[in-house]
Image 1: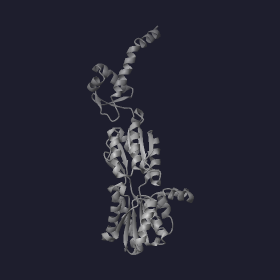
Image 2: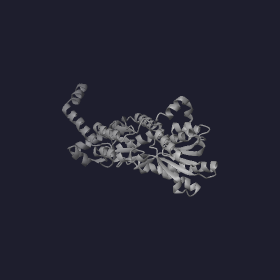
Image 3: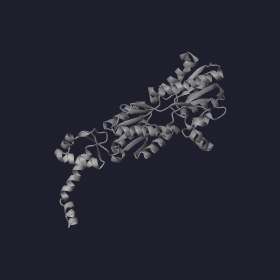
Image 4: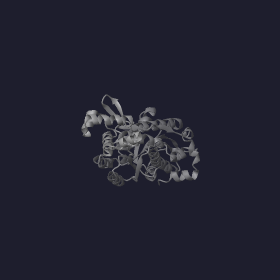
Length: 391
């Protein structure tokens, strides 16, 4: 009899039970990712519930672990953000052309997978037009956030505008975009490290005397990337003293092996300098410049420093007779963890810095095996294919 009465009580009013569940769901919907805490009055108004009914449902949700009481009549969600929504992030890769870009992409894919983030990956192919088209795809796909890695500074405003108009936040890698948070190099600092390395090598091998400094720039990337070279010049001047402006040359290597090789070939045909310091915005440019000296039979006339410490540069600096003094490390294999963490914080309504910098360290023949012990696992044939894959 008691059991029969209990069963009758449980099923006395199914419609009422359904309404209670629906009302509880409406209350939970009020607590959006990044939203502020809510009080009883606000919840009552939002959900069109009487205060007693709202209070009863709130207490039940607290008991079930769905909400928590933060202060008197103030409630917040107790559901982990990872369980509330699976975020969908768009990632526009710079290119598959460079080892540095590929490592950044691999790192982001791996970190997104570990964080349970759905990642839509597109390739900008080192092209402003493709980057703009990819931004339009992200808008159509309604991604929650975009991680943008494209090199053309002039097209940054157009890419950013497309995304911002659609209400999509942006994290820009290496090249600042209007309205975006920045992640990447501290360019002046990286340049300064490289300049100090060039000056020390010049002192050791040439007694601190040189004829010319040649910088291979990446004009389309804009003024921020240019500060790598500004910092490099400043680093040389700090240790070697005044460097006359007429001894400094800038060539646009476009950040690529082939174009840097071509520009340096042409330059060497017209100069009589015997001691040339070479600084570049990245390793492909540096390796192209070194190849030009080697082809001309005057490899000993140069000392060079690169930027990125890519696998190509690390292979080069292990050569006993290499004129590559070193390359400033950016450690792209760690980009993903930092960027995905920033992205999730942004999506969860937390404040993130306008700019976050990777760490930098000079990688040389003396410390390369310590910093990158696994390089020895890559066969010579594989490394050579990596070295010239961007040609």
